[in-house]
Length: 184
Image (cartoon, rainbow, N blue to C red; front, side, top):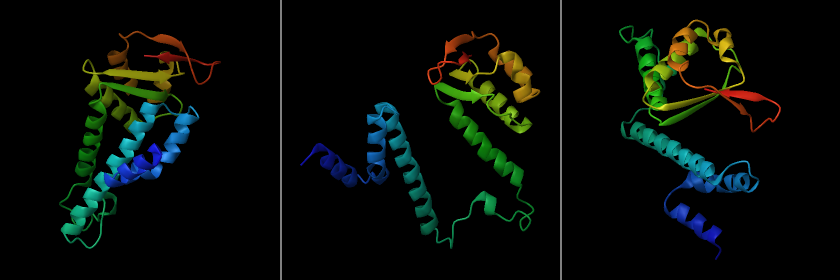
């Protein structure tokens, strides 16, 4: 019996179905050099974690005997005017910001590829502020820092204070030898 078959059996025994179902795809990506081995393992484990969280949520719904699953976007706030939709959404947003603020190194790629609306600019500022002097943030962009006002609008002034004292490095972009990027 080959190690591949043994691995498949182990994944089944451990109930790691997402990894088992996606293993061939990621093995091919690694073989073709499109993903590193570590990246493939990370993504496979992330798929498994998401599936586990989804199963846990469905299990809770089933145990609670709810007739169906309903998300915040499905809730009729007009029927319950005492419930503040904005407060619930902001709470969810704060959880997402905390999620991204916890990583020791966060890489933000393609800043400036698309324009960013005011709300998104404010979120970006909150994220940078939360990470400021606690964790490393790498921002990759082809847009010169002087042009960020066009991308972000007014929050760029506040972000500027958080970022400007750090060194900008001109680097040759790996994925496109003819473009230079700025690493902040």
